[in-house]
Length: 465
Image 1 (spheres, rainbow, N blue to C red):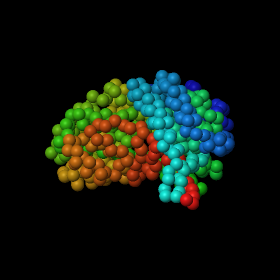
Image 2: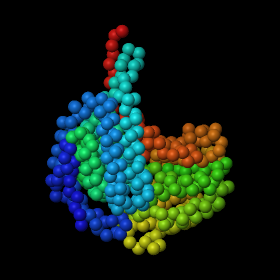
Image 3: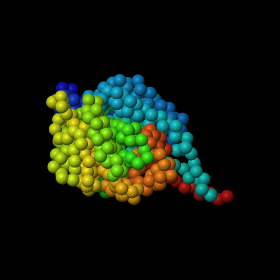
Image 4: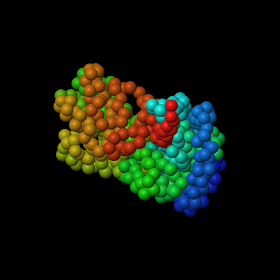
């Protein structure tokens, strides 16, 4: 069993000093296959000190310098894409094709998106007799989850570097092999001290987010984790940017082509086996089309069974099974496909049956709570007011998708949705557009110019004419 016990501090791969560690099972087999060590307060101190020392020089660099570093980092990932994709498949369970295209391909596009936005992000603005400059917030603590173990770090690293910040990253302890490769790439492409990485658990994250020399905290993860990080940051009056969960709606209007629309929504809902914060896990269809649409969705789900990877851990498997079992006993919920239990032919690992329910009750747990697995719920609606109430009727507001041919109606519905990203008729993801949500989906924005702005503060300089 391989042990991962290193950090990236001041441009060097160094051993972790702490004695805390955990053993992790393969999502594909369920067997223990790797051990990871967790950084302690001394490791965090060393990383924060390196970031603080590097901050003055990096904050004064020009757009060209930052552009070159971001491009070098993107190229470094491309050069080792095979290794990184294989690591993510092994640790998260993402099928190889999706691992290459999304888990590795997306962060490359994201980094180059930041590079493209640099001139605009660093340009001065004139307001009457004031010059407004955008200055880096300082040293950033960045905490990321396991489901996209390269993309989520690069979304924060790229934005922070573009803004002129330095940072300390605490990636998930569930993906140590991916973390190790990421640290090697960072060590070879970023100036010493600008990006530091301390792998660890929740205690490591709490130590980092509460550190006195951290100027801002950026967190992606669960609502519960976000609350804990926000509380630690609030005690020190630090800005805290949160990107949390979702229960996103895919909306079918009565004039859309259902076959194309439903296939797209099912694919979106099952991406990464549903372990995606903006997955379209609630599919809203007209009452007049409910039975037909539910049958089509169930058929599509059954076809997806052979294509999906496992969930990441036994704990996640158990959590999703709990949702399935409770929904299966709910008289207001009808099972269409899948259901509780292991995927047929997959006795090993954490494979879940892709599942579809129809719910008569919009307040059922399966219709409101984030499951984070390959589980879809179909709900019927009457008129457009009923549709909006259903679409906005959860504690989340991260994403949505609308399918319909009446442009004016689609636009009117989109304006009423409380969601941070709204796709229309299958429009592709835009890595330069702002990503974030409303309500318990978080308070920050990532990607592109808006992502860079999160790590900047405007400074007004008034001059006499």
